[in-house]
Image (cartoon, rainbow, N blue to C red; front, side, top):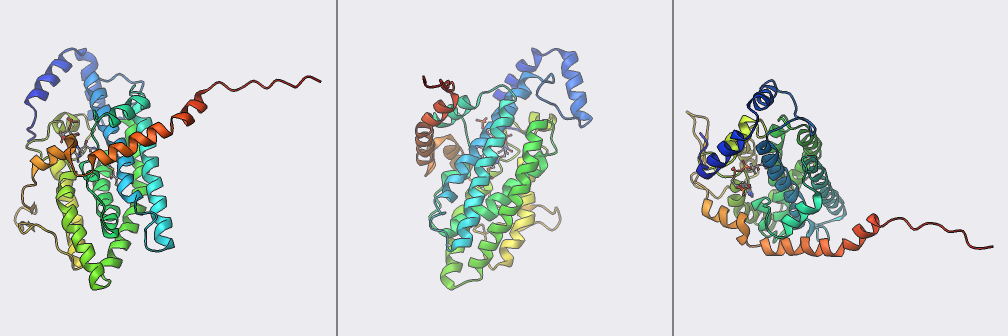
Length: 328
Ligand code: BYC
């Protein structure tokens, strides 16, 4: 049961009422048959709008997500870690490029997406609004945030919109290297000295709540899940992804002698579901609406990058100077 959207329900009904019922039925039949929808195919305006919203937010999450880890490149312990982290951050920015291109196929220009990001109109993942104080925070992101992203993206790569699915397939392949790198870093700290183990545990404690928020609000209050799942943009609900993540990674965290800061976390042996303390959805709302610990800093960095890069974009767009042979 999905629940959050009385206002959205009204919007959806109005938007769909304007569509040609025959085209809409044919479109939904294609989706039910598992066909991919391509950019030049007919699609309801609401499908287009929802895809732009979701893919654009995803793209923003990749470039903003590269910032907390990016600050650790110069301080990564050792040359190998530095090289690997640099490659990972570069991959994340590349993912943003792929995703902006996928969103552009739906008609929204990239410049407009970037403007909406730096003006605070578009959202991006909650989790990147928290600070990476220590090297262990960066390791947590590389292992567990990437793990969470993979759970969501593998599911959605089987979805209905061709360009998004193809981008996700490529992204998941790269993320699986990030995950291995991150796991290796966490194993190193968790099996290291007392100080290293404590640093890793403190990172898990700091990041656990944002990690639970990462999969989105619970299905009971999710606004967009119902229509996105009906049209196979989302192939698993927020709660299903959260459960799958807990299933796959809590045992691995425990295996390393680390604990999870939730005394209610346990697997119900009857239902097979993980039980946990209900995440603080008020904090989640505050953070995604601009009031997290690092929102202002993250957006300021993007705005500066945008301003400093303007001359490059202008130079690329300027007409080529004509070569005029010098007079003999
Ligand atoms: N953070 O109706 P709901 C990475 C918003 S990057 C912020 O459930 P939906 C990485 C939601 O937008 C990968 N906002 O929404 C990068 C909506 O607000 P609006 C990140 C969130 O769309 C670098 C409202 O809450 N992954 O891994 O059905 C380094 C109601 O939510 C969040 C993606 O972007 C959130 N966590 O489902 C390392 C995956 N959750 O728009 C790693 C693609 C919800 O009505 N996105 N909101 O104002 C999705 O799969 C879906 O959009 C979500 C949310 C599952 C996130």
